[in-house]
Length: 83
Image (cartoon, rainbow, N blue to C red; front, side, top):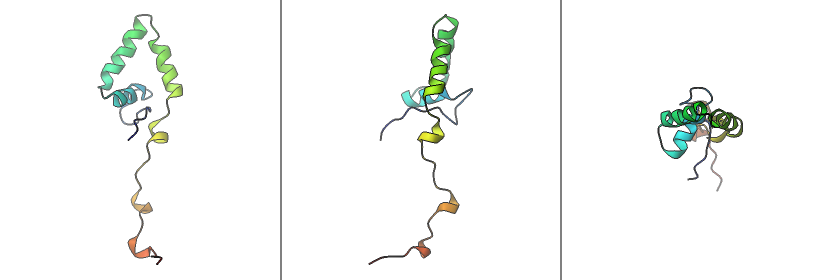
């Protein structure tokens, strides 16, 4: 399965960037958040990098397919078998 980078819907504080990066790299999103804050406070590109990720990285809802709802399920009694 191919890994995709996206902004997280379930683990977001502002835009889901750090949550998505944490899920992509398999680390705690809190560590990613601390790194962004440290770079921003140290005069580095933390805030600019966050804004770029916010614009460039797609939202999870546009990347990860949603499971079918109960209304969309196929009724086996209504399926026609073609021989």
